Each structure stands twice: as structure tokens, then as C-alpha cells.
Image (cartoon, rainbow, N blue to C red; front, side, top):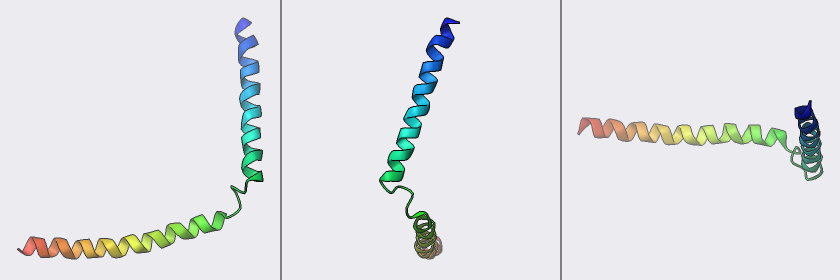
Length: 65
């Protein structure tokens, strides 16, 4: 029983702090541009694939030598 006297206030405090951080994030615009992040992932993939192709060509030249 004494454990519940500690755990219930701790759980309530954690829940309220999570809710406060959520509202803080909403107020500061953390959820404004969700599609932009998805687009940036695709753009980075294309840039990395070009670099990977260059690396493959370098490996082929090194293997022939």
C-alpha cells in the first residue's frame, strides 16, 4: 500500500509533464512541416546513390590495378 502512495503521484507527474511537453511542441511549431522531412529523406537518398556509384567505379579501378 505504501508503494502505491509513491507510484500514483509519480505516474501523475510523468503524465502531466508529457502533456505539457506535447503542448509546448505544438505551440513552438514542431509539427508544422511533416511532409518536408519525408521529402528530404528522398533527396538525400538520391545524393548518396550518386556518391555510391562513384565509389563503385573507384573500387573497380582499384581491383584492376
